[in-house]
Image 1 (cartoon, rainbow, N blue to C red):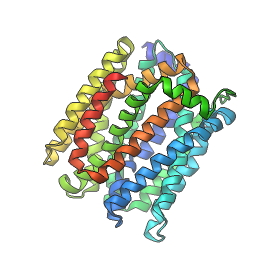
Image 2 (cartoon, helix red, strand yellow):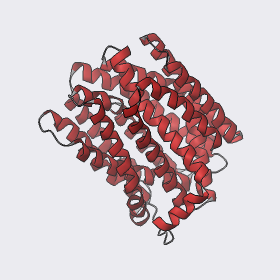
Image 3 (cartoon, rainbow, N blue to C red):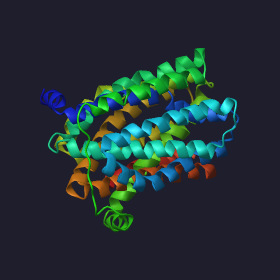
Image 4 (cartoon, rainbow, N blue to C red):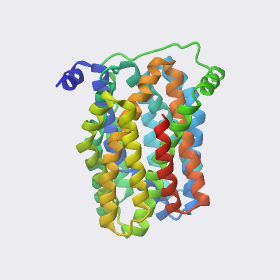
Length: 373
């Protein structure tokens, strides 16, 4: 009940909940299909890997100017101005049927969007969330996003089955525009941090090497699920069915909704223990993914993936915001984003030199690194 009251009273977080719910719904309709879409368009596996690697490396480079933009013009304005780049990204993907736009250009467009949005979002959430109930507040945000995201992949898969990617791109673009409306029901936040600089950030990084490694591992695992797992099940387990891949992702979201409230409450009692439980469960998920050979096994393991993430993501985010408020908030949020994006870039390049299933073993091992966050 206390969480619900807090939800209704905290206007700044309410706006974030609603805006990110719509955005998550839109992205969940499409994001999981991007790797297989590019492969189906005729791009080689290595070309798609480089596409994602460029996307994440450029994202790292853009975190610093994006941070300065958010501090000068406002956290919400940073999120708002990310949307046109995201829509342009989808438009360029849609145009690949007619115009062979270099993939690196499309990757850079997405990186601009990603850096602007997540710097604004995390700075805003870290600023306005309550330390005592931060686990529950992150849990509420997760439940709202998962609730909308749960049906997104299934709907996206159905649209792709009966229509095509252009139709799906149009639907997603309209929803993304709608997601900006709730952001400005209250005033934006402007922070002129004169102390924020690349040199001081590097000094901060030296003191936070352990956190940097753990957050990089978090990025490893996220990219492996988005890329390696989705490509593997689509081509080797689900007989190249977009609708089946969509429903597979939805099952993970549904499991997350069912269990995230437990992870949220436990996170406010013992954050580090909750994170360790989630990391260990995620380790087991990756171990069992190695032996998946049938659709039933894939659907079952993705249900447990949702359970594991409900105990992993909430304490991870809550701990990140705790540490950001105890340290220099802007430097810590920038550190988080640099680490996660570098982790994503590193693991995607590593897939060029290993099999997809070898990537699953890497996913298991990197999950255990989160014990040290």
